Every structure is written in structure tokens, then in C-alpha cells.
Image (cartoon, rainbow, N blue to C red; front, side):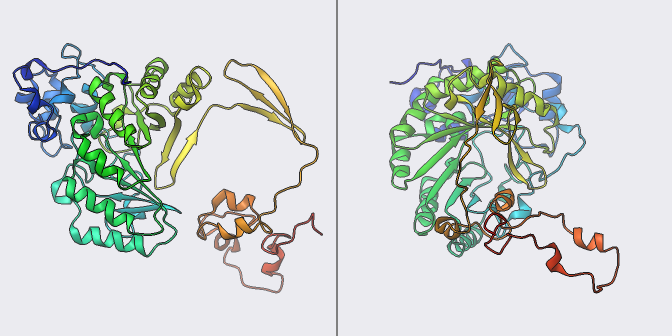
Length: 446
């Protein structure tokens, strides 16, 4: 049973026959991007008009369906602020970057980002159904000249074939679901031909911007390439319409697990009550809230940023106050390429060698008694651990806990502390090799 939500069509589209309105190709070919076109739907502010008249601003295109969800009488409508540019996009801010996540730095071949040990991000297009004003890839997204060539696609496939630790590929861009059906299927088929790729994921806002793209033909094609997962992108409960509910119903019936990634934005969804309404409506349409992102330090998006504390406050207002599977992880995608860092309120208040003190969402404080007898797991004698070690250099904090090493040092640390000195008789590297690290023997075993 599909949850019932509202459906709207702007008055200028009243005479459009349903067969056209519900055709995704018609929607794409009738996107709005000029002052004259958008003002047929609602009156623009001076700031919006100035931005739309500015050359070289990030691309504007809005589907007739999505612009119909905007309240024409509200200049602060949360959907409007996501897709209609304002003059504030031209205001620089401290720490603003073109590629704030350093994706291109972690790109072994064009369009492929290998940041984490066992998974890659595969950019398959630079085109979207509608363009979000806070887009983290605005450096390439929306630019047809920056799209990926057949030769670059073959380089991506060749890299994946030759990199057996990759078991999970995330298709993104741009938006993979705007690709021609034959091209999208070719990408999925080529990935499925690589034996060590276990999971394919798609990141798409098409079900939100263009729900009529989710046809039976599309879901039948996607079903052939399981296990396949899909994350959509909804930022505000006003985006959840009858059409989106129908689209997610089709995808769920095709056996595709659905998640949602949203971005925390000032004046749009930086309210715990809005967020609670959002996540509860998402689970009603069988979409699991996955990530709530802190806004990236991307050029043109400074006016969307909130303090990080606002995200922690929102998680505090969700945890315990609604279903656990409706609570997303709050994520700061580390500037400079550090990857996703989850943040949450502090529930561990204190700890000793035998007891921890915890609190719950109500402020209830309790203790948990630690076991007095525990046979510590030894990764050095565990066959599973030995066979499943991550690539060298990427084990991180887990590697410290596993006893692979005792230190993680900044680049140049040892050279700095040599102070230009000479190698002399007291300098012996063995002195700084801790007992139990790398020897398979710990102090306890001695």
C-alpha cells in the first residue's frame, strides 16, 4: 500500500495532457532556466533575477514537475531555495574551495575516485535532471564539455578489473538515471562482468526531480543486476509527493534497498521538527534515512552552511524520539579528502576499568558493568583477521587497535625531530620498536 501524499501541477501546465506530463523525456526537454520562464510560475526576487542574469554561474535547470512543488507565494520556500539561484552564490567565504573533498586528488583515472579501501565512486555523467545550488561537484556537473568519454569509461573499467580489493562501486555524477537506458545498462552489465565487484550502488536525485523516469522498464532492467542499492536525495518533507511515493514503491518492489542522503542547510531544514517530519515520511515510503551531511565548503554554497553543532542538535532530537532506523548518521565529509566522519551527541559520560556511565535521550543516567573475565581477541592468531586485512596504509585507527603499529605520524615527523643531526651510535631503530608490535607476541604472552 502506497502512503498518500499530495500532488501539484503549476497552473501554467494545466493544459498539458497527462501522457506528456508523465513522460520523463518531455519533462527533461521542458526544463525552466530563464527569468522569463520561471516568472510564468512565480515572481522572482531581485536577488534571484540578478543571479539568473549573471554569466558563468552554476547551471540552472528545473523540471516542470519539481518547480510545481514550490509555493509561488513564499519567496523562502525550501524547495525554491535549493534550485533557484540568488546573488548570495557570488559571495566568497573563508575556506571556500573548487574541489573541497579532493576527489580529483584521489582519482587514479578520469571520473573514478578511489578514496576508501574496498569501494570506488564512478562518475558516469555530468548531467542532472535539475541542478542543486549547493552541488559539491559544481566544478564539472552541468557542463556538457566536461562529461566522460568512451575512452575514459574504458579506463575506469580497466582499473576496476585490475584492482581486486574493490568490491563496491557507487555510480554517481551528475545523475546516472538521466543516462540513455542503453548506456546505463551497458555500465551495469560491464560492472557485473567483473567477478570481485559484489555490490553496485546508484546515487540519484531523479526519483525526486523526475519521478516519472522510474518506469516498469527501468525497474525490470535494474533487477537484472542485483545486488543493487539506490540512495535518493530528499532534503525537506515538501519534496515527498504522491509521485515520489509511487516511484519508491516501484523500486522497492523490484527488490532495491533505498536510502536517503540529505544536506543540512540554513533556512531549509536546520530545524529538528522539520528533520523529524522528513525522516518519518521517508520511512513511510520505504526509504531509510542514511546520511545527513554538513554542507561542503564548495564555491557558491556558503549561505547554506550551518554550525556543525546544529547537526548534533538535530541528531539529539531524533535519537530516542523516533524509530532508530529513521535516524541518519550526521556526517562531515572532511575537507581535503579525509572522507566521511560521523558525529553524534555524547552518550558515554565516563568510564573506569570495570564500569561505564551512560545517558539516554531523556537524560536518564545508568551504569553498565564490564565483564571481569574476558579472553581478549588476538588478531595475530585469528585466521579470519589475517586473510581479511585491508590494503597497507589504509588500516588507520583499526590497525593501531589490531596491534599492526603503535604510531600514526604526520608526514616528515621523524625528519623534523632529527633536527639535522647525524646518524650516531645511540641511534638504533630497534629501540623504538614496541614489544608485541609486529612480532606476534604481546606483553601478556611473555
